[in-house]
Each structure stands twice: as C-alpha cells, then as structure tokens.
Image: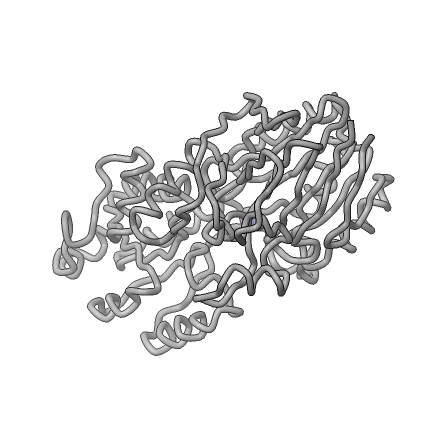
Amino acid sequence: MTTTVTVLNGVDTIGGNVVAFETQTARVIMDFGINFAPAESQPDDLLSNGVLPALPDLFTDIAGDKQTAIFISHLHLDHMGALKYLTKLTPVYMTMASATLYAELIRQGLELAPNAQVQVIAPNKDVQIGDLTVRAFATDHDIMGAVMFEVTDGQHRFVHSGDVRYDGWHPERVTAWTQYLHEHRPDLFFVEGTEFSFDDDTSRQRRTEATVLTDFTNAMASDDLVVINPYERNVERLMNLSAAARQANRELVWDERFAGILRAMGVSNEIMLGQDVTVADIQQQPGRYVLQNHFDNLHLLDAFDTFSYLHMNGEPLGDYDPRYADLTAYLAQRGVALQLAGASGHATPDDLLRIAVEVDAKMTLPWHSFHPEREAEALRQIGIETYLPKKGETFTFE
Ligand SMILES: [Zn+2]
C-alpha cells in the first residue's frame, strides 16, 4: 500500500498550512486556512494564483475520485478560511467546541460555508476515512476546542501539530500528546514555528493568559471605566475575564456579538450592552463596569470622559492592519494610553524545540512561520532530524 503526503500551502507563512494524505482510495486534508484573499475573490482565480491549495476538484466542477474529508485543528481564519470557497459538499471534521462556535459565527453572518458539511470529531476517538485513520488530541492554543491530528495508514504515522503553546492554562494536554507520540515515533511531524518568525527582542517579556488576567485586575483597581478589546473566538479568555471582573466587583458588559457567542458556548448570565446595561448606567458609575469594545464600535467610547484601554488581541491585531493606525490615533486624541494586554497562542522557540524533542519523530518538518529555516536550524543544532518542506512537495511511503 502506498501513502503520499503532499504539502499544498503555507510553508513560509503564518497559517494557510494545508497538507494532504492520500492512498489509492482516500484523501485526508488538514488544515484548510487561507492567508489573504481580497473580498469578492473567485475560487478559480485564487486556485490559479496559488492562494487556495491545489485541490481543483474541491474548488471547481472537476470531479474527485477519492473519498475526501477535511480536518480543522481550530477555528482561526488561517486554519479554516478556505472552507467558504468549497464548491461541492465536503465533510469537514472539527471538535464539538469548534462546531458550536462555527455555527454561531454563521448565525451572526461572520462566517459562511454552504458546502462544508460539519462533522464532530471527539479527542482520542478514531475517525476512519477509507483506509486512513485520523485521531485528534486536545491541545493548548488561544481558542477553545483546539486539537492536533495524527493520521495513520496502519503502517505509517503522520502528525500535524496545529497551533500550540506550552504556557497556557492546559500544558498537561500538550504533555499528553507529546508523550503519546514519543511512544509511537511518527514518520513525519509537521510542527508550527510562529514564534521563530520574529526578530529577537529580549526586552519584550513573554506574556501569557495569566499575565492578561493580572494586567486586567490591576487596571480595575482604579475608579475609571476599563475598556477591553479581546478576540471573540478566545472564549475561554472571555470567561476568565468575566470571572475576574466579578471578583473586582465590576460587571463586564459585552456587545451583541460577544454576548451571542458566550451564550452559544453555554455561558449564561452574561451582561449585554443595551439589553441589561445602558451607556447611561456606565456613565453614572464607570468604576462599576468593564466595557468590551469592538473596533467597529470605537466611537461608542466618545460617551465616556476617561477610561483605560486594554488591547487583548482583538481587532485590529497589529500595525499591518491599516485600522490599527486609526485606533492609535483615536486613543491619542482622547489622551488614553494603548495598553497591550494580550498574550500569544504560540509556543516560544524554546518550547517548540522541547515539543520536537519530546515527540522525537523520525522526521520533523517546520512550517507555519515566516522563518521556518530558523526553526529548522535550531532543531538540527539539538540533533533533531529535520526537513524544510517545499510547496507542492510529495513524500511517498510504501
Ligand atoms: Zn495558525
């Protein structure tokens, strides 16, 4: 039996990583993200210029000849943004938390993928796609329901790390899957390398979910209104922020989008602006509240004389986004400091090396990085068998 592994996209970018595992009759694809596509893009254009992975039968009316399924490690755009371009009904596996969040994002009009047939994959339970077996393992990333995937053909074992960090709230999950893999020695281990992308800035202290909460609690010690800008898909952080606010005798007030997501994810008793609390209520007692603010509603903040502003990985995420300049200009004009109070979902370079050592694959392939060659070099220096994959490259296993 022959199994091929083809690297379709995302070898030197953060996200958009797509790899296909194929036998004579079955095909498993993971993940299914996209880096950047202008609005109104047509699938065939994106296919011909290589923005979409080279899987013509999924994006045109060309017929496919294999049983195919897509697996999504987590619900960040760079891992699932290509789903909306599917032109025919295709099974798409994700965890229950991802599926619930996805359904809510679709309900709110924030996502749309009419041809994605969502199926739930539970961690540690095998899913059979023809003669390929896929197993998901719970991991730690800055989104709920994140997993990594193992694919086996009965003889060979391949692993896609997904996005991972070792200093979030669930390091034991990472330890569990690295130990499992250590016992099974994968043939190929595709490992993310996001944090190898950036030039070393030793003055920049590593921030974690714990520092996010500490900064938040410190900000709430004043009598001012605290405004936060988190990312709506990091639901676990939203829940923790809510609990921390309650501890500080404040009420965290969410906009409709965030309140809807929290409700869908099973969190009750969250407070929604306009429904449970009004702007006037907050104006009267600013020290009793925390206000979540999305960039789209930035000018809602005109209603408040003063406030502190904690940017917690919401939009706009960084200065590569033109809206970031608008945000900084607005805050400067209001005399409010922009406090960067987020945390990364990605492991430090040291932790990535540690993960690779613990997994001890026969071959480790760094990707999901602007500088995968740096990760490759660091891995080789510690004696890890490493290969830098190229876009379109196929590995064959007999
Ligand atoms: Zn990613």
